Image (cartoon, rainbow, N blue to C red; front, top):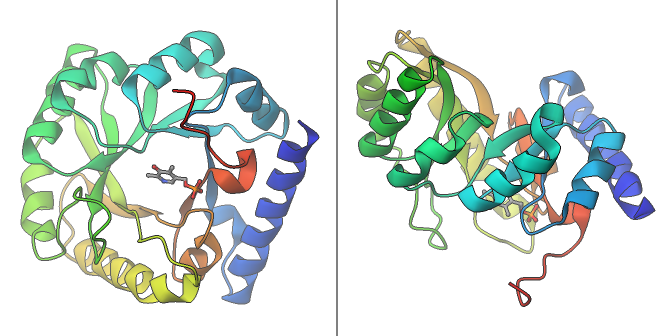
Length: 233
Ligand SMILES: *Cc1c(COP(=O)(O)O)cnc(C)c1O
């Protein structure tokens, strides 16, 4: 599994280059290794390369992997989250990237209160992505954030988006730019409990472009662990 170590080196190198290209500090950018569908040994390998942030999109998978890896890793919920499953991961994840409804935010708030924590969340945006039905439209975002910010056990830390799959990553540049601008606009409103420090955008095919446009968290799966095989599941 040496290739995982090599891939991580390559991705970190690309992150550094992309950041420097636009005069940013590479340390502002967090690499999330998207370990969904991949076995524990792969995660152990990433941990050995000092990558501690793991992205997963299924509640059940987080529970199983958490059982084995525990707090050696920081777990990121990056997939669609059903309200009735919040209770299973609230004590395990460090950031929920995929908040896109008031109902979900309220559930996270009440479950966080139950265990006495404040949960960090991102608001998921759907900008020009017909491949996914999840996420808010940019017109809805301000009102939504104002409402969610009133929940006491949630901190809004920023925005997340899943850009469309494109052959040429340049095609997504405008989307990343719009989200950065949206974050700047929201920050200017100085809403309590809301900051826009995190922009979770960029995946294997487009993370360097996302970084050039202001991403602070890139979610890379294939580029680290190789292609995913869904046929055995
Ligand atoms: C699977 C997934 C990723 C990683 O995708 P790759 O193209 O393999 O890097 C990133 N973000 C989300 C939300 C995902 O579901």
